Image 1 (cartoon, rainbow, N blue to C red):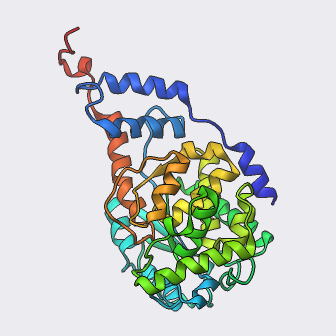
Image 2: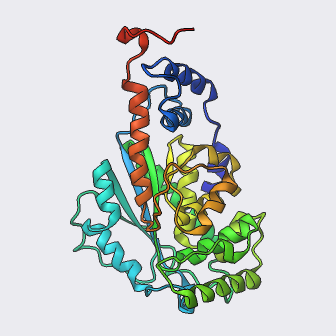
Image 3: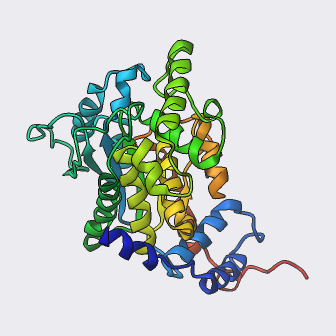
Length: 359
């Protein structure tokens, strides 16, 4: 727990003095004040996170964390758990949605086995030069949390610290912006449980259709989550307890990535519902971390909006996405880059010889 205990106190505040300076610069660019809307807010936010008046987002990284969930044995998904490992191979071949979108935005995809329920053989799958594989496996999937905690408290801490280390290992390579993503059959069940506990909302109100389940599986999913909460009694005032009892390794890893990014003043763009659950854990551990998070989109999973609202995060996009993998993060990186380019490259009224607004 040493790494976690060192990381949380090291998370600072936004650079508000610089943000005021950047606002004045934005107001003096060749446009009516505020006319680029949330792009201007985003530019100022990124400057405040990085403490750089002219931030650069050349080096982009998306972490796609993969882990399995023991609760899948209770038939909460339309797909078998084997799909988790199969999709990791697809990521490494460069054929998944995240690969396509990451290539478009110029981001590297780091695929992480943090808890897949099988031993991977990846030697024949490193074919896409934009994908990197890392083995951070904690266990062969979590336990079925309807019968007891999903993991031990030690494993919960290990998942958080694995995420922090992933960020630290990227620092020498110059990560300017980080995106979070996930892969794990059953992880919307875990995310719904976390969201219900931490928002205090009814399970049915924060549980969605995940992989596209029918009414019968949905009703069973809600019952399974209610049972898990009743059996484990996770403490909403103890984020580690919630993660341990109803979480997933990839969710803990995402929370760690958020904490590590904030500590190092790197903007972290979170994807959808699973990343939102990870962000809930991270912000309970360190409330100040929310200032370093950029919410890429509002997922079609109904619990995601509740999570974002609780954290006070306003998503950049609402595209009915629910794939995960980091796809929303990759798309939103375009907007982040557009925002800083406006700040860095637009002319001022004085430099362009354009008359200002009449007072």
